[in-house]
Structures are given as structure tokens and as C-alpha cells.
Image 1: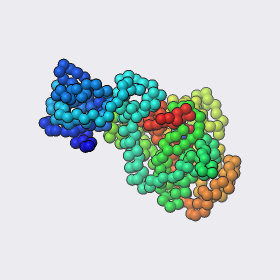
Image 2: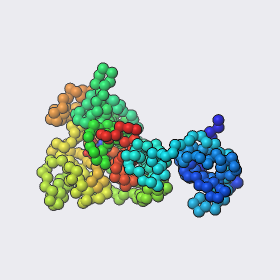
Image 3: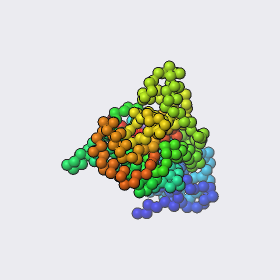
Image 4: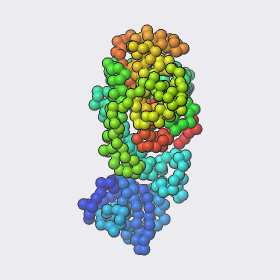
Length: 429
Ligand code: ATP
Ligand code: MN
């Protein structure tokens, strides 16, 4: 059976008038107008009007449910319709797959369904052009990120997601049985990407990571996509600059390459102003103090504090130089103040998008810090031994792709921008 199509709908225009085409896709709508039957056909590139002519054809589609799959052979002709620039006059209709009626959600989105019902029927939800636009945009974001990083000499890598020891201390790890051993799902590629700087110097990874946190917020998932880099011969502000470049390139790329998607989503993407503001942790504490929120030096910034900071600083900004005690064991201290770290978070208003910093590369200092944080250096020997093989000074960051997508699309809930989100409640489909 021949399944080939000659054209995607998006590649057809009036210049093809009179030409025969074979198109295929989903029946979005079906209307009888007097003696004529109009069928609206959608493929991933767009939508076209088909006039069904001939008794046999009309009979074929008469009881056809919407979202059924058809392949149509016909000729391009002018149309009287105001919604379409041309129409296809059917010569042959093949019904390839029938959809049930009613469907669990209105796939066109005329009837709004709540997010839970949509996620339960996610594949069908992609027939909603708003949903499709989000994931087409996500594809472009990934293209742009890869381009930026490859152009800067980064090598894309894949590190294991099944790991044998609790790499960053053990909190929030999913554990699983690995034959007769205990294993975990990786929370981040942190230790691997650091080790890889020995051989590849600049690496990046785009992958899913796992956190067993019972967070019920619009920004936390138990499985999320992280964009991670690690680079040798760079200090923390050098990699912060790369992050700024990567993010602004994404905005520029999407502004140019996702014109239809922006229209469908009702957004107007513009490259953010650079350089992003840099606010030290100390300044943040002072600013919050002026707003009546008194925090001691060394206190963590909680959600409510970040909300206030987000009101004071809309858009992108870096929060830099966090106290050492708030940072993981691998973070490097500042040379001029050992209580502070060479670290940063990239914020968008209240929302944390990324954390990064300079890493310790001296194995003795690392052992000391592990002990200070109540971790056992002997459990990190596989990692620490690489630090005796000529470990270069290095820095890096991890950026939450799902959170960046929610900023780009101006959709608060990360579940909307992830195909099959996983949260403490949701494990299916
Ligand atoms: P938060 O404080 O918001 O829970 P975090 O500081 O624990 O985040 P990091 O370990 O710094 O997160 O991870 C780097 C980035 O990965 C975060 O800035 C965020 O964008 C993303 N990220 C981390 N955890 C999650 C999650 N559970 N769901 C979605 N994205 C996440
Ligand atoms: Mn963080």
C-alpha cells in the first residue's frame, strides 16, 4: 500500500494551481453545505480545505469522525473561502484510521479542557495548535542551545542516569533495585561532567534528571530536563557569561524561527537586554531588609523572599556570591572572602532558572569540604581519584530547560511545556 504524500500542506500554495497533489493527515472538520461537502485537513505543517466531490467520496466521509486519518489525492484550485488561500478538489479519498467519537478532550481546543484531562490524553492534545506550538518551539530552543554551545567549542556528552552511589549527598534520590544491588537515578550530571573536563575540556549534556521531592509547585517536576555545561580554564563569571549568551541566543533564534508559534500562543518574543544585572547575595539581603524582611547573613532565600526580589527585579538577573554554607561541597570559595562562594543563580523574577559556579579542583580541599558537610569522602573515591590525574580548574552550570520554556512561552506551569510530566501524583501516561 502506498502511503507516500507528495506535499506537506504547508508547502502548497496557489502557484500549484491545477497540479495534482497527494496529502494526508487528520480530519479537523467536516461540513455539508448544500450539495458540497467541505473537509478540513490538518498535518503537522498546517491546515487545508478539501472539497469532496463525487457521490462515492461524499458517501465515504459521511459518517467519518473528526480526527480520523485520511490520504487525499486531488487537484489544487481557487477557493471562495475567506479562510483558505486555495482548496483541494478531491479525486480519491483513502481512510487510513478511524477515530472514536466522542474524544476525551476537544483536540482543537475550542472547548477548553483542564490540564489534567489534557495530560491524560497528551498525544491527542498535540492536535491543539497551542500545545503543538509549545513543543515546536521547544525543538527550536534545543537547536539554538546546541548551536551556541557547539560554536563555543563544547562537546555534547551523555552521562549515566543509573548510578551506584548517592552522588551529591543522597537527599531526594530515587532508589531502585539493580539486580541484587542498590542503585539510584541521577539528580544531575555534576560529578561526571567535572571529571570529563580532564579529557574533553568543554562538555555539555542535555538530559532528564530525577529528584524525589514531594514538591507541589508549578516549577518542580520529579523528572526534568537539564542543560548542563562544564568548562576548564574558566572562572564562574566566565561561564555565567556563556549562560547569558545561550539564553539571549535562544530568544533571538525563537523570535526569528517561531513566527507562527508566537502568533498561535499570543506572545511576542524579544531578545532580553544585556548584560543581565548582577546582584550579590549580600545586596539581596539588604534590599529585602529595606522591604521589611530581615534575614541574617547566611540565611537561605526562601520562596517568599525570592518573590519579593522578583518584584524588585523583573526579568533576568544573576544572584551571585552566595555564602559557602548554602552551597554544595564542590563549590569553590572566593579568594578575598572565604565565607563566600564563587557561585551564581540565574533568576527570571522570582524563578530560579540555573545554578552554577567555580568548582574545587584540589582533591584535598574537596575531602575537607565533604567532611565538613557530613559526607564521607570514602564514598566519593571513584570521583576523587580523577582529581589526582591532572584536574584543571573548571566551572559550570545547570539550567532547567522546562523552566526556561515556561519563561519563553509565558506559561507558569512547567507541566504545560513538558510532554509527559512526572510529579509526585502523576506517573501516567
Ligand atoms: P529549586 O531551589 O528551585 O528547587 P535547585 O536549586 O534545587 O532548584 P539545582 O540543583 O540548582 O536546583 O538545579 C539546577 C536547575 O535545574 C535549577 O535552577 C532549575 O532550573 C532546574 N531544576 C532543579 N530541580 C528541578 C525540578 N524539580 N523541576 C524542574 N526543574 C528543576
Ligand atoms: Mn539551585
